[in-house]
Image (cartoon, rainbow, N blue to C red; front, side, top):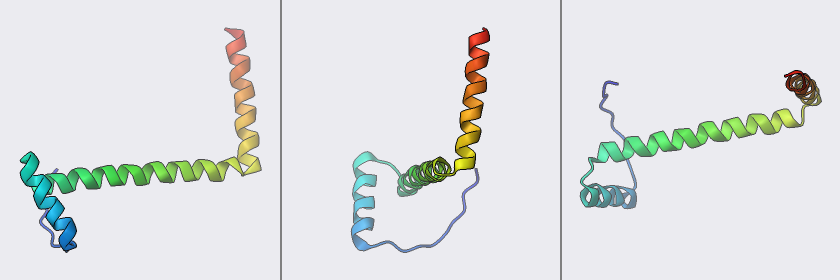
Length: 80
């Protein structure tokens, strides 16, 4: 993955923490920011996934399809 330079602003407190941990663990600031963003995006994806399942759980059509599929699956298991 190629790098791209961008400009942004952070609160003084956040920048101070970034400086502190970068120096403490001898990790480049951009690497800390990259890891933090990746972790945050992963949490967002997980939250979207959970939200879609919650929405699906109250949709009677989807619930019926899932139950029918489960019945078929249990029949297949019983045949083995």
